[in-house]
Image (cartoon, one colour):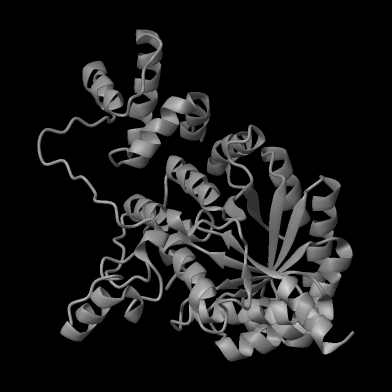
Length: 420
């Protein structure tokens, strides 16, 4: 194959976004999301064109109703075309349990691969050979149950000897895995090391690679992009794991919006590496604001794209330049992120719907949303669900949450149901 033909092949490979807010983001210490909030995140991700949401833990009992309700939304076409995938330990018993407890169709199976984890975490329970054996058995069981898209995660891949990582990945491919997730679990990699390691892994294994990176050293976006570049230059598709507003364990994960902006506008990626064309960046403002509200964490003032200062200019030179031509001091347009419309803040009387709402106040709230009920019985049924939703989220419900409950009351009922 000529050099020119190689370049054509490389250009055909793409970068896809797999958002893990509902799996890794909710593991953020001291924070979390109610099941309705996780469902709304899935709805917004789908509207945004994100290819996949790792939407929860299929072997965790308090997730069961939420997971099955969201899978029902997928089957009825509401959550389409986004792929909903569950995170499970790469242990055959967990795979069997997940398939019995839920109707999950896509999975990522995870197991630690570094010597540090094998010795310090497993403490003699597994050898390197045992790790591969457990993973392979889990993959076989998942395929037996008809799992459609199956990823295998190498936890702590960045501290795993490359020869062993290649051996592990080849075994996963042979067993039937569709993708390998390279986990920079501790944010240990830098853009240079991950590029070379992932490129070699891609060339040796010839399987699409996911990049799951953490921000412990403050380089998570750069490391994620460098890993994606390594995968594509190695001849395979790349999948970058993100979370909305960079939520995640310790210092967090790769921020969804920042990652998309970096792929679209950085000098080395723009026009050279292809982002999944389904991505609609004009949904960025909406999903970032919602996640901020749901998690109870303000968006940093200097957050790329969605921070309140992202398009603010005060310096005389900068203000003058931006007024003359926005491209002087702005790489991209605020309209592209869904910003620019004035936001109305109610400063007078407000009627909200909550756990102690009565029918009159409830109807007032829904009248403003232009939602009509068939009769009083129908309205009372939705009111009861809204009360449960408020107990569930412990926050005033957003307009989209109220609309969701009115539109999908039986799905909402399942999401709110907990059976200890």
